[in-house]
Image (cartoon, rainbow, N blue to C red; front, side, top):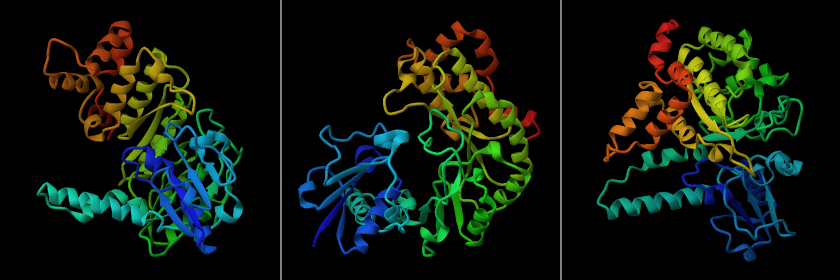
Length: 390
């Protein structure tokens, strides 16, 4: 029997990567339907055993072998290789129902390794707790209802189209046996058919989520009414990428507060794209402060693409790292100001005669820009939210 090899490069090259590659699952389903044996490969050493090998990569910084390239036998694809120029899958594969069993053997292997380790250490192996990290592999139907975005953000991989359009009917990837639905749409709310599609999701009776987040700038009363009353899975996620959207985001935050009474709301906050100077730091804190005012959790996203990671070259590199550590842990940002977080890190340092990297980054920036520090470094979520009627 002819064999097809599939490599999820992010699974091999990234620590604790825990999300299935949809392209891999579609490729697997297509070839299995044709009668081929399909293997998920966990290394790059056995390509000779296969008729065709497909290597998929989402993240640009995932390491792959230097010798890897497109050949008649080996096919590479995904934003991790081509950023915003990634070629589409052939329609016959793109619109094939995914093979949700592709990762099953790997999950079983990981579970058995963890079980053996627990037994060796005299510990109890808790199967369900261990398997919870694989929930996207086991519990979700995954796909795109829409494709495209009209924003053309220069930092984004989704620049191929200048509009949002319907891409796949829900039945194309929906498996009724699975508990939940995960959408990977680029800008769902920008699609003219958003209402009909959202109603279809609601009508399944299953919990659903948008993995990439939603465009809060497109929220209306009608959209909020449907969205915030649906069986949404987990936290609602949006993005606050540009300080130029400050006033518009402020309006939408008021709208979100009006309709959302139950769920946590998170916002990705992009930094290090327009610049990596004090202005970028100030703009980040200004956006964070507005979000905290409405009880929303910021998640700092440090810009990088295939060729560059500007924040790492910045004089404020340590400060960017510290800001991310503060922001991206909800239990911390809910309780501590930025200064309190840095001081808490200093308390953990054994040698108190030297400043930890967190407090050092704060102190150096504060000396250089005391007005910015005075305005933002002592703000606490609890105080901002209460003062805003929360």
